[in-house]
Image 1 (cartoon, rainbow, N blue to C red):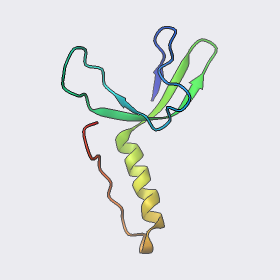
Image 2: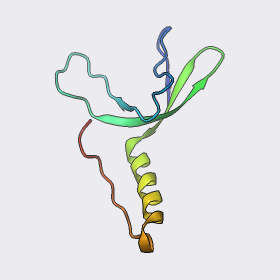
Image 3: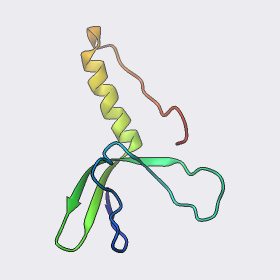
Image 4: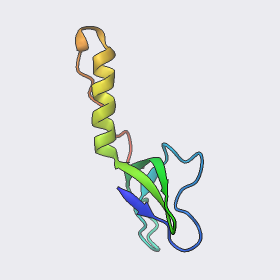
Length: 84
């Protein structure tokens, strides 16, 4: 997914790869769940975009890679440890 900057400030900056993207919920005091992970940025002539992958897809791909490295390619099952 592409997340466009709002105003003059970019959504992400150098060093933000791996950061979790959270849903903004206004004035709610409860923590909003994370839904994506930033892995790149795309600067264009007019805007800068943060490129992110849904957390579920990132975990599925990581589990596949870990499984390939395990003896006998034993399946690896990853899940989110918290709502953050």
